[in-house]
Length: 222
Length: 222
Image 1 (spheres, rainbow over the protein chains, first blue to last red):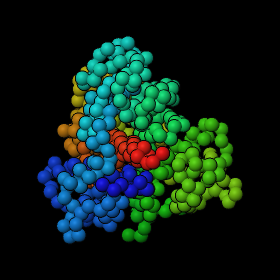
Image 2: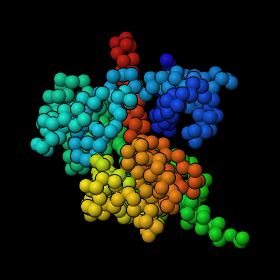
Image 3: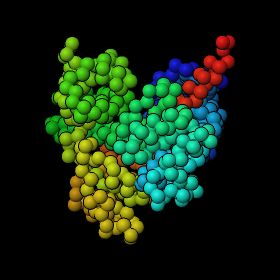
Image 4: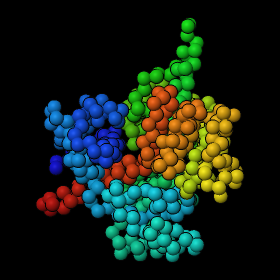
């Protein structure tokens, strides 16, 4: 498929949502969906949906809507779900453990190979079947195994150093949960940070807006 | 301050990033910053920054840039950081525990009041000073305390039910980490879901794009 390499960040951020929505539709047995209905379920307009998907070469037939399974497959392809990506987790504290135990890496096209920690109580054990090695052996492991992404859940004080080590050892991306802004000089390595606070502050904004509006309504003459 | 209530989702999503960036600049001792420099540090253009902030009534003086502390304060106000929001956590598994122990609620304007679980081993204990109560006492607690937001980290099977109970008991927002799409009929309640997979798939996309480009380069005549 022809891929348009000049795609806006906003569209890139929506693609995973399409994929997630289509997976849910598929599980519910929906075979075909109009851009109207797909938009409604995602809080987007039909024209927005058509524009987004047009960036990637179209899909869909006028008047027939989208076939759920093939659209999901196409978007999955674009997202790189079939690229055989692999991942390792650095840090097996509560968050690292929660992610290893509960996150469905394989549904997102990633194979979780190993975890690393410095805590001797967890080194040598397995978490949900995933072996935990000592952080000292990170480079050796990355030398022997093709690893696409390193997931960072180490303490802030160790974040930049572990990020640097991952990059030096050849990962293509860092999935950063440390709440520290990893700086990365290599422009062939992608850092994707998960900031819980961005999400809570957006929620805070939306709640505050509604409270303001209710206050205004109360102030209006009955 | 005059607040524009018709602000696009994209701008709302960027506001917390401005707030975070300005907090970091403040900590580094930066007093004043140009829209150019602010934009560069956030991967946005100066004109984008000026447009975004214009939605909220301007700030900044032509040629002088923005005063970091007052801009941070204004954006914090818009985000509702000084509204005295309160929050409770439902579910104290690994993820709930990681968030209770590590997430800086107060920096985001939230006071964490309590956690709830059904596990008798944690009920009655404290996690990082936060009392853990039995989920049965949720309604009683919400009746006695003004709670703005319920954070959900319960198992998927309990997600909708606990969400419904939070809404019935009067919370204004649900911060949803369950990976289940909570449906909420009340349009005065906001559901904000954190989907780790959206972030990983965006990373997967960016890695795949770069790999494709490198492949193309290899294919070009030397």
